[in-house]
Image (tube, rainbow, N blue to C red):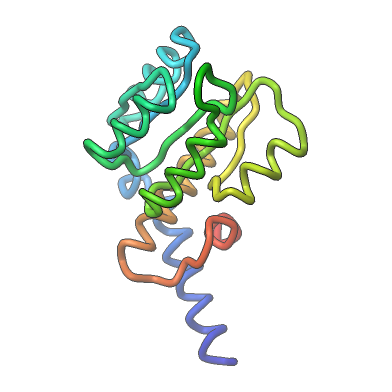
Length: 166
């Protein structure tokens, strides 16, 4: 028990350091935005690029899945409601095909049930539109930190665990 507690504390310190490091995460993120609203996707792309991230945009789930297969991003921000295949349906496929990619779901039509469904399906987090940029930065920092910790071989068993480490 004591060993587990010590390992957990060490994981927590490394996770916080990665998330708070001014040079650790900024400019490193490969971000994919999947949203059918071109104007919102463009604003999202500009904001994240200005923050130092490499950003790609897809306008639907099929194009988003193809973009992930071509070059796996660190984090995906995906709209729940899109024409054709919904974001929740695409999330299920992403979880099975690309388990290392953290997916943050977004919607302007947020309900408690939709957010519960997204988290249960494996979303890292859930944002409502209009986006709060402070919250967006926080969620992105947590997702990038969780990925960094996982890549270093540390035990982060779920996105919910990773979010609690900050």
